[in-house]
Image (cartoon, rainbow, N blue to C red; front, side, top):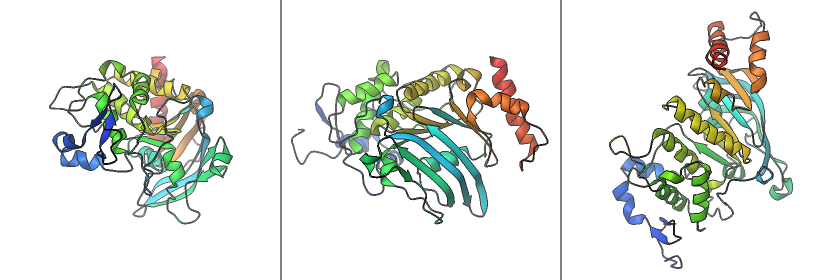
Length: 348
């Protein structure tokens, strides 16, 4: 079947390396909304130009020197929509293989910043600079990619940059009747990859600690399946299908108990140790999760209260003068200080 030029667009490779055709199962497994989700090219790792033939993608966890992006920098990033300023001059720097956590109360701009850094289309006006610096500039004919158009207020959505980014949404969306492995095969097939993927998917399952449940049905609220923590790790596994240099994860611990949340974050930490650069938004992490971060970005009302190494954050807030001239609501500043100094610090 693999040699058939007319084989289905929706085909994959099972655990034994045999071709499987999923086209007849799509309408059975998927609701209309699920099918619409699966057909979203951006979620499948394709850019607007149709980067279908990702023949070079290995889906294998990379070593540090295999990450094509040496570091990510963003300077004075602002975002306005419908006359409201959502982000106000946010700047930062992230080396490869590091984990950045974007913290802040609800409505602070965490998900908005994550979307902009991940080159997800925004309808408002974006300004500033976002640069992905390449480890080997000769491979890309440029030392870096500038994500934003100069003075245009719009996003370039550079194809090279998008192919280097993986994005994991806050909500887990799967086809309930598929197993964990079938879910990965299904999404890989929808991406249009013609590579044999059985070994690659096996490595992703191992990396995300999903091997024990690879043949378990994913399930849904009405159909028993994998646990919430396993579902979250499966979402991250889908983000790894394109072998991203930078992985963006929106609220990875939402709706998880403390044990499952810690297990998910330890898995993300291991990805960084393998060379992936990870940026995640997160709300009020416990101390054992907080200690896994390399860098922190703390936002309040779209403004950066702190950016820097996680190890320096508590001392920074201890030393800061309460009368410092920062144009924010003092109550919000204190709430964030308490979240760090009490909710986190007292767990140590």
